[in-house]
Image (cartoon, rainbow, N blue to C red; front, side, top):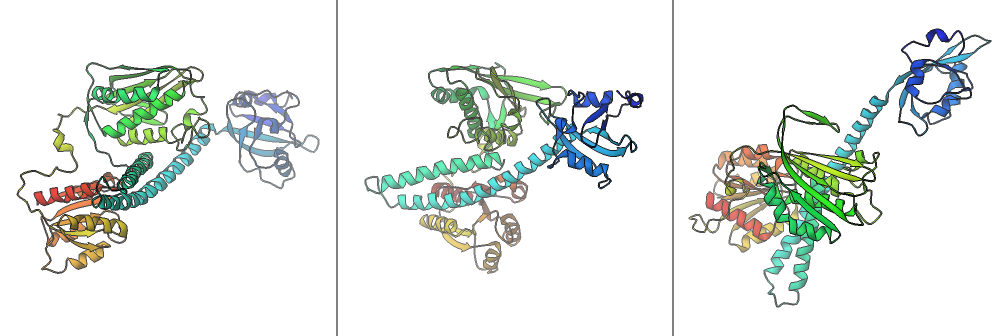
Length: 501
């Protein structure tokens, strides 16, 4: 080490002495501790770092000639060691006999990691918005397809040669609706129907299907806490989460093995921080799913919940299974974490908030009241149907008229309010889309109810009820009907509203 350089050996600031040609002439202890790479007599800065987008030597020469002020540059470490991002400031030093550059290094690894996480969160949000928008449009299309299929089925008996074809259309539209549900689950905008559940019963009901999914080579074992607390979740969506995790575990064990699903209660006295998530203190129900598979490489674990990311070969996975599970768990108010060791096993742990309130009667959590058999309300009513999608409006109007209702149609909120200006027009039920050009459904309904209080309201939407739940809560006698809905869904919902009006 040059004698003149030894005086700064113990300085806590990482410093490098660099020749204009790129060789590292000297370094202090802080620099060597930061870089953690061998800096021998022939080491060059370009051997340690990369990331300028052009040769580092060009940057060094520009600074040496005074053509650059030595502005801050972010470089990434070279080689197989731990990833390191540094900010380097270069300044010319020395005299004509010994011209060189002094590099001041700052560790920016944590900053770059946070920046990458922020960029990733923006990307995920953008994909989520896209998925939600696409799913909304598809729900409108599927409502029209399945609805008109229902209308055709009314005119065909089982003996008709077209009946089986119509059933195929109906079944495939339902399959398409399930795929759309996956998109909405990823974007956390699917329609949840939460109810109080005992996970022991839910998993017991699912066991038969899970055993069929895993096949003969894989054993499925369930271990439950005998005093397991209830949770509040959508049973169908929760089953989808478990099935996705079980299928992934099965695929990780091509030669067979065991999948263990365990449930237990957990009380957190203080919040825990993990994987950039903070789990608040409180009572939770844990579901652990462990396999005996080949594990997940450490560098891939941060990516497994991203949409369309899969470790399976082409054609074996869509990359939506875990992202769907993540979306459902988060929308339920829970958390999902993964522990894995390559070559050994993987454990997924799901945290669900325990439901400590008194268990409500099943009828209290139903979004749509069943039609009473002995109701005294009218069989037929006057319906104002407000829907901007013409195919959906055409199906809904025909379905309601077939049941004897009088239907007035409007393509937007402004047209509906114009119709309601007629004081002689009686309306029993508003059936309205939520998201429309101009005024949205809830805004239009609130204005109409000022002059027509007590009118029943049915909101329909391809988005989740939570997207406007606060607005709906302010409107009395209103229910929500998610798209895609069937002919029976629509007429039964309207009948229930008529009975309650």
